[in-house]
Length: 123
Image (cartoon, rainbow, N blue to C red):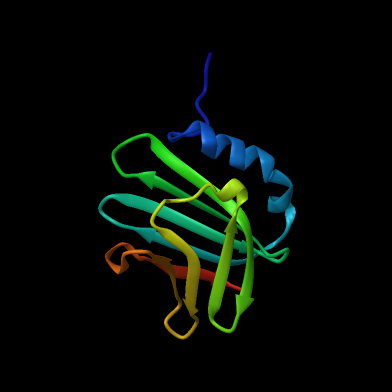
């Protein structure tokens, strides 16, 4: 009997990033954010070791992507360094955290495509 453990199928590059960054995921999560839009279901985790992981699934399909890497923080700004530079082509690598509103925004080259997420866990 075959049992499926996930209903999403990451692309090959996402699988490589996930495998190559698995040791980073051993660190405790300090911030989690989520955003469910009409088109995507997105999750972001920041960890104590200054690593992050981001996953996005296209709603209604099995297509998903996975990005990971490290970050540096300066005030309310995060500077994301993506593993092997594998990222959405529109992303700048900058994110802004608004702790009062419990939001994080991933900044895009075109502001129409900024990704705003709700912080669900903040340590």
